[in-house]
Amino acid sequence: MDRTVFLPGKYGRFEPNDNGFCEGVSGKGTFKGLKGAGTLHIKSANPIDRFLILDGQLAPAN
Image 1 (cartoon, helix red, strand yellow):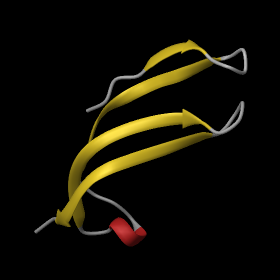
Image 2 (cartoon, rainbow, N blue to C red):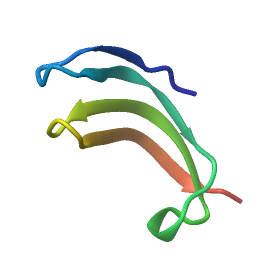
Image 3 (cartoon, one colour):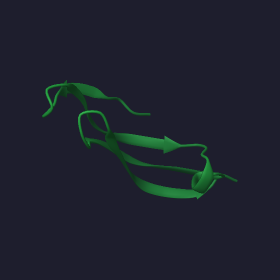
């Protein structure tokens, strides 16, 4: 679960000011068959793009 709060950012637009928890229960590609939990940080890369930084633990889903 995660909650995002939007505040005015350095580019003059509202940006997510987000530090929270994340939980993964499914995925594709490299993350297929894994589950995990950790922290989530969202940072602005430029006026449109964002970096999603997930830090935590992964384990097999079974």
